[in-house]
Structure formats: C-alpha cells, structure tokens
Length: 150
Image 1 (tube, rainbow, N blue to C red):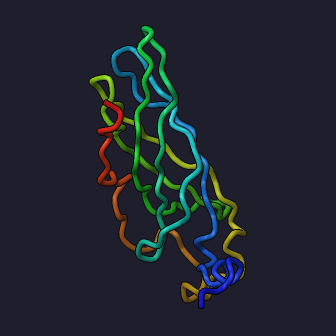
Image 2: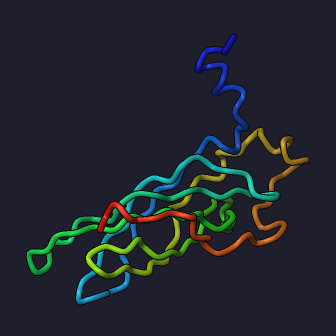
Image 3: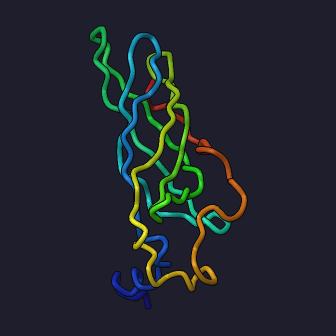
C-alpha cells in the first residue's frame, strides 16, 4: 500500500528538496531577444553533486506584429559553491526553432542558501563539497523537439 504524501516527502533525499529561480535574456536574432525565466525542477543527483532541469517557454515577442515564443528544455551544470556556502548552477542552451529561427542563451541560476543542507551531510559521507568530481557538461541540451511551435 502506498504511503501518504508526507511519507513520500520524508523518503526523498533532503539534498533534493530545493529549486532555483532564473532570469536571463537570449541573444539577439532577427532584431529581437526573449526573456527566459522560471523556477527549476527539483535537484537530480549527478556524481557527487546535482543538476536541475530548466524547461518552459520564453516570453512572447510581438515585434513586427508577428508574435511568437520559443520552447527550451536543458539541464544545468553541476552545483558551483560560492564563498558564503550557497550555490548556483551555470547553464547554456538553444531554444527550439519557431518563426524560422532560434536563440542561444547562457546564464546562471539564483543562489540557494547554504543552510539548505544543514544536517544532511551524512548522506554524502560528511560535508558536501559541490565542486568534487567530474563536470558533467555545461548546460547539457536535453533531447527535446519544438515541433509544436512551427
């Protein structure tokens, strides 16, 4: 028998219970740019660190009375620890094609406080160091199609 939602939350690794916000602007293509903003998905373990999925749609561009948006679906890089103990994730990607073009983007998530992990270091054999291990790719592009936009 499945447990309650509270039981499932208690079973989730504590390092996973956090998200990041992000707000960036794409490169200029065909004389316009888009905003890329949102809240990441929950953390997903990668080696000794973790990544987040970022997906959604850009803002709606109305330049030249031909409104459109672009979809995106990427994974961030692993966590990068800041001097104060908080962390960010760097990411880059390419939007889906719409209206005959796409946009490149690059940025970082907002900070997550260091104390999000207080008391949970034992799951990683002691104090968790975000910068240990292999870099799993700078903003790896997910396999995602934007076909519904055209």
